[in-house]
Length: 289
Image 1 (tube, rainbow, N blue to C red):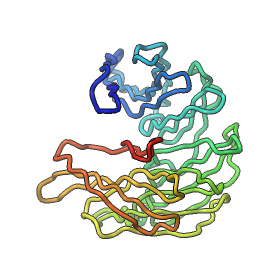
Image 2: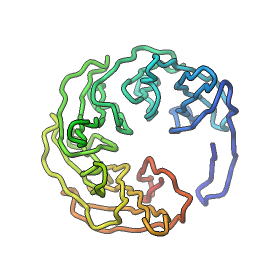
Image 3: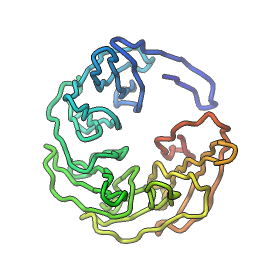
Image 4: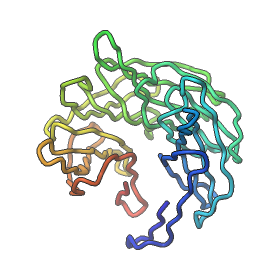
């Protein structure tokens, strides 16, 4: 984990050795106490067992505790790994097929399985009523198409409602200031077809208000995350790859409250960018990825 200052200079750099196998870091978030929470997967090759783990650190990146969550034989905890701190100082973790709620020490309060997680969706968010909203996608083998599920939970993880969107593959969902939701993802996510980034705005019950697509980018373009901005518009991050040179770019897309494009900006990163997970607006009006 790398901590940098406001000028991009390194403050500290910490590594967390593999304990039982091959470990892959997935997400990191700053916590209310100024420390950090890390979400990761660990695979024990000899026994073919997969674990999910979270690591809590202080503000200097030193480990305070580590908790493991054993998978079932089908490995349903493997994949995903988006983590967020909740208002009770605990954590909510979205894995591929499962959601785990923990207390502030990482001990499990409840863990539940939900349908429609075959391809996963990166995010889960606590909503203003203390419940949760998450997005997930499922491949339909008979048609090679993808369906997206927007699911609202209460504080105990029980499903309140679920909406299904055909032809979508979802990446993230965030609650908006009006109580509705903004969904980001990619249409036509099927074998042999280029994906088309999209934004969908819903009301508080998950009913669609508008959907806007952004089809004028490279063939390999994947919208990975969106967030409402202080002007009530949206900022989105799009991962792009040139199919000839295999160079990758980050495209920032700024829209108004109706999804109309205001500006775009391309950040060249060469061939080193394998994934892009999250974008957020900072207090000075800028953004970080």
